[in-house]
Amino acid sequence: MHQQKNKKILIYFFLLLLVGSINNINLNNLKFKKINDINIIGLGNNDNLILLQKIKDMNLDNIFSININEITDQIDSNSLVEKYVIFKRYPSSLDINIEKTKFLARINNNGKTFFLGSNGKLSKNNFSNNQLPFIFGNPDIADFLNFKKIIDQSKISYDEIKNLYYFSSKRWDLELRNNIVIKLSKNYTKETLELVSEFLYSNEFKGIKIIDARIKNQIIIDD
Image 1 (spheres, rainbow, N blue to C red):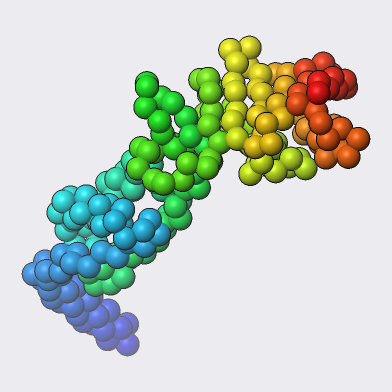
Image 2 (cartoon, rainbow, N blue to C red):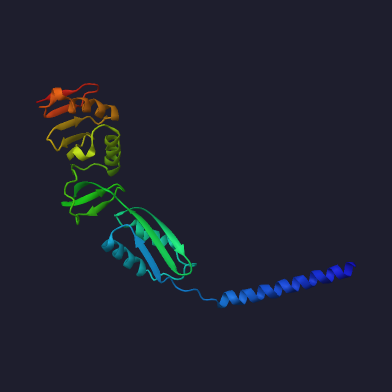
């Protein structure tokens, strides 16, 4: 009985080796199709095509052996991209869904005007949106994005802003579309902007031109 059990084990062992060898031969000879279909959506027709061509120029291999980091590096280098997802569709396709960055302002950089996106990147001024506020000065991009976030949390609408002025002392002035100027200290907070809005939207102060909030808990107005 014991010998029969040992024989069965040996038979199963040899069968396992035989099946494994056949599978290895098949896998070695198997050739996967190269990626032949890449679909990109989210940037607009022209920019989708530009990015598509750059990825195609990478001469991607089959879907199992591609270096996904090379693709993400190419996408990340595009200043119009906010975020994205890459889907592999077997056997030989890629779908890339992109969320385009939102342009927040125009800014001068080395004598040229760029659009500043919500992704913190600068894009060439190849677009027709000149209604965005212009940033004067040379702020750190992270500082501006934080400033924009605080404005959005306040009662002041970002759409009301015509120009933003950044000073070397790290403070901001806002010029609204109705030509009212708001002066802020470098220690501005959401509460500072809320205090400003009480004067900005009050019927008692309709003729004001300047709202000076540089002194803590104090507002100076000039008409």
